[in-house]
Image (cartoon, rainbow, N blue to C red; front, side, top):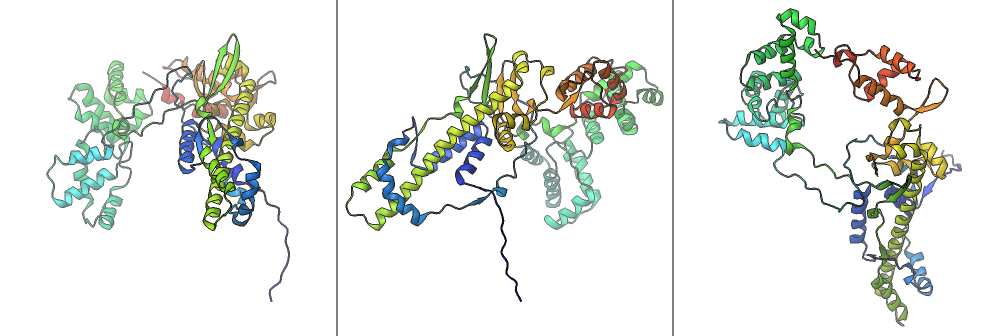
Length: 485
């Protein structure tokens, strides 16, 4: 027997306007412009130009409010569906300098043959039977963007059978790989590992004593070379220090990622347009929102006039009522969108201004050691907004400063205590760590323990494992791999 019961459940709901605002806040300048164009194309009641939101008479609003009650299609929306992207994503750290005073220029984008298409085109210079051609094209298709074939040969043989109906052997695949794929440009493409990639490049060059020696070292003592066990290499190959330096230089000049060097393979980089500009004027900081984030929009007069015409009509048919309801929907959407843009501008400015004031010393000097510890909650508390709102403002957005264009996310960092008990930014510690490593003797690099001791002397008592973590975050290898001859 079924048992019935009542349950109370408290849910948080967002209106469509709130959702629209959240999504607009998250967009960087270029994506925002695309969204703006899309809205203008889809909503004929939205025009560019100065706003005239009071063009719709109140009496006219009453005329079609009844229609809206009959045809209301708005739905409550569960907040959980829209908060999955609250976290700030990992950022690419490259940026282009930009000034609001500069004349806006369009970035020229490269076009041409793609990386894999170029490899396939090169196959046309070889003579193949049907089976060989299928294998060669399959191998080209298995090359990743770095230029490597990462999969095992046996797996490629199985896939050829299942997907291309080509039944072959490992020996046949390896033969075509070495005789054909490894001869394609860029040199080194199709290698199965770094060792093979470097050896292919050396063998394609004109033979010299040093190159022959380099090939021998890579083939028989690759691990020693990678781990920079130079003394072992000198003993094994009876090398002088000068000869080992020449071998090291020869190998260092090779390309470990041949695929990435191909211009046609590079993805078209999105031009970075700063959302804000901070200038130093008479010793004071001045924050400006990029004008491209503040478009002039207005409600279409033509659509407003259509509603006025409907009001003046004595006989109102069903088709006219349907038409006026459609117009009402478009006008409402236009007003909502314009209001959302206004709120977006205000939110962006308030949030960035608070960040600027919080990191005032940095923006005044450009010295990264003056960056204060700052987390999302610090800014959210100051502007009385949710942490997710601050996250959206910082999402993929940049600010132009006197010291270059910076990713807003980079101004956020955790804190640590120095020897005086003061809170300092982990970015400050990383900057000092980077400087110490840069100035070290490359013949005798500093170990993590020694780096920890140096930082402690400078007033930053952190553990060796913390030094190791920061070093890895800075993409700096261990001492052994920083060693030079």
